[in-house]
Image (cartoon, rainbow, N blue to C red; front, side, top):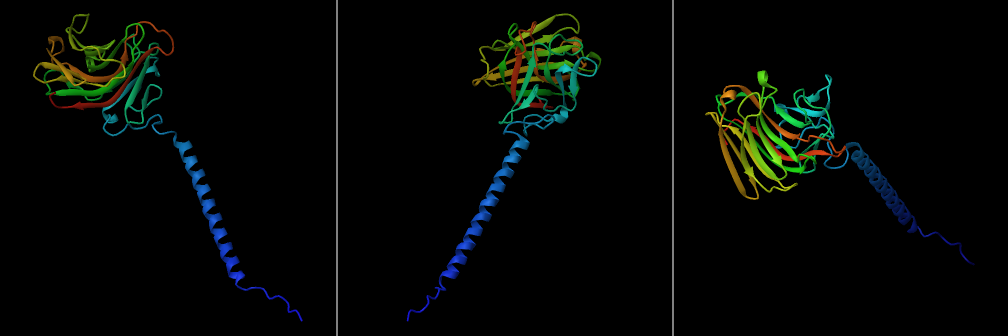
Amino acid sequence: MKLPRVPDTRSIPLSRRQLTVAVVIVVLLGGGLWLAFATRGERAQYGPPGAAPSGAQPAPGTVNWAGWKLTLPEEGKKGNAAIVEPAALTPPWLTANADGSLTFWAPAEGATTKNSNHPRTELNSLNNFSAATSGPHTLKASLAVNQVPEDSKSIIIGQIHGADDISSVPYVMLHYRDGDLRVVVKQKQKGSDAQSYPLLTGVPLNQRFDITISDVGNGQLAFSATYNGQTQQATSPVPDAFHDETVRFQVGDYQQADNSNGATDGGKVTFYQISELSTAP
């Protein structure tokens, strides 16, 4: 007689093991998909690397916002150039790059300050000091000029500017014009009387260089610029008209276009470091 087939009980534990493995795989795959979607959502929320929202802080060491306010080439409440205080990233005028540097963009056509004809995206120091009599004060920066306005090809990249009672008076201006750097020191608070001091020549667009502007505190001004391992320096006496007057540092993109050649015309400057120091150069 043929006996009925008895199931092989060894197959039962094997099926359970297979089922357990299948469940684990499903769980792992589900967790991986969930993580992928969560990560994708996080990237969408915070934007691509290097993008910074308006009002964000710069990379450490680039600039301390607490000591600066920002002038923009767009209208503020009173119709003149808008002010952001304390300064903050404000696209498209002031943006951060992936390497921590800051790019200043100022169009040839835009809002200006009350006593200027040129739009700017510029940091104004909140730390005023007395010219020639309050000890050393130094502005140091590392930067590259990326674009100049089409007609003048000139940008003021750093200043010692009048403050308080002479807040409308430019004083010491560091010009980048078509690859050349020079410092202009006004001799009088009114009029065009000024002394010019050449520093560098042949600095191309998009090439990094360093600058220093200093009120030494003993009646002298000192300037330096370094490019491609070469440093040029100059000194100037503090003019009598500015002796003991309240002044401040300004730095950024004060483009000097006389006429606009369209929406893309203007100045663009990238700063890798900006420091205001109470030391001699």
